[in-house]
Length: 125
Image 1 (tube, rainbow, N blue to C red):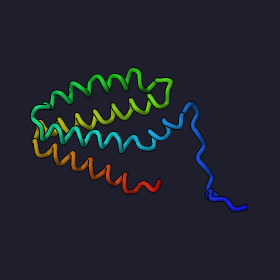
Image 2: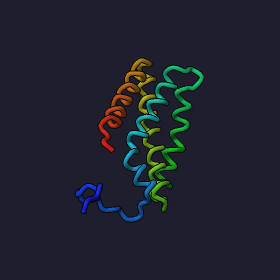
Image 3: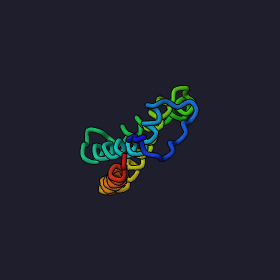
Image 4: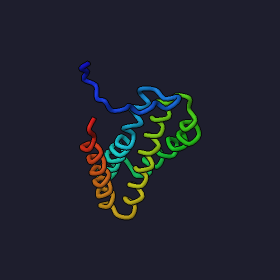
């Protein structure tokens, strides 16, 4: 019997997961890093968007994840809320460093971008 499927065992599916939720879970760190990179660059380069705007956006998104997203019945909603909360937490870290030194925010955004690229290029799928 010839098949094009590998003879490796597949991973078991977790209870209460969906195809979209599993796809998001496999990519959620990369997504959160890229969102934080984009926000960090926007805050560092555009003075129309203040650092306080990022903090004001992060507070409700983190609260949404903490109080609703972690216990949501939909796996996709849980993963999306995790991505939103994690990206905003990383963006707030960039903002805190931007308050200390403005060039440090760009450096941190660059480090986040390098980590995200590492995840991207190491993905074999």
